[in-house]
Length: 127
Image (cartoon, rainbow, N blue to C red; front, top):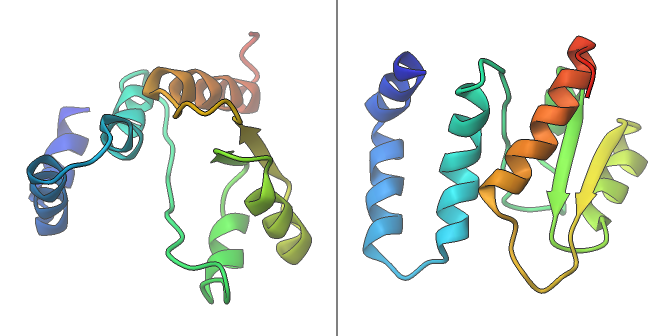
């Protein structure tokens, strides 16, 4: 985990993003989701990747190839799953939606639990 942290910290964009987030008004959940969840899951010895789509129309040109390069695609959404519906319809990828419509943001621990469950299923670890 420390090696991964050192590698991430060596990227100038990581440091810029961190200080930009810390120096401006932002919800703490954004920090937790973008930075905390990958570290929480990696701390358990599991490997995940994340992507952030800046625009949806048109989708990025390489999105289908990126999605197909993974065994499981989980899409957390603060709505009823519209992005997962678009991804499944356009690319025929079995994207697993994780939706929340409660007026409250995701917590890092909540997403850590969901992602860990999916990774354990892929590895055949009983729940």
